[in-house]
Image (tube, rainbow, N blue to C red):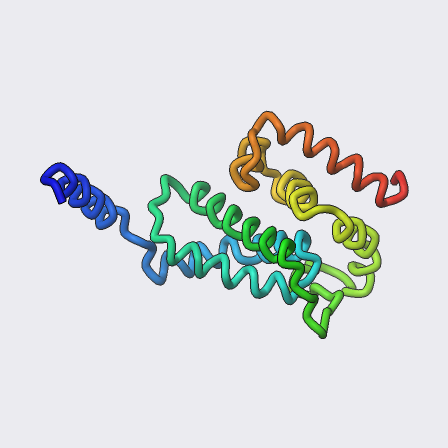
Length: 182
């Protein structure tokens, strides 16, 4: 190794030490703020609450293992959603079989009222989102459930910001067609 190479390696190691990972308390607070929203996102794009549980756990594990330094809370959150999106996309590509006991109930996310009424209201939308490509349903979820900007959607899904508008339009049109024009 040359002297210049050793200096570069040493500077990278110093930078890694400066970017300390979250301590347990900070991670718990971040998890509490993001887990529910991320689980709902994963449940919608994967079409399975059980798959969402697995993907959620793997997403946080990969976030911790990355040891990446983040500029802000929003940057960390977008990175987490990017990890989750990639994991869901990989799962879809492998076409893993659905778990045996697929439950159509999401009682943890029903704010008020009856779970049965909630499921009746969501069943058509669920069916339609299951028939869409993962990127399309992810894009719709990020735009309308999360309120993400086109730039944020582009970063999360690995799409150029300029293409998000067109892809989102196509996804909405496809969703409308799957819902019977409603």
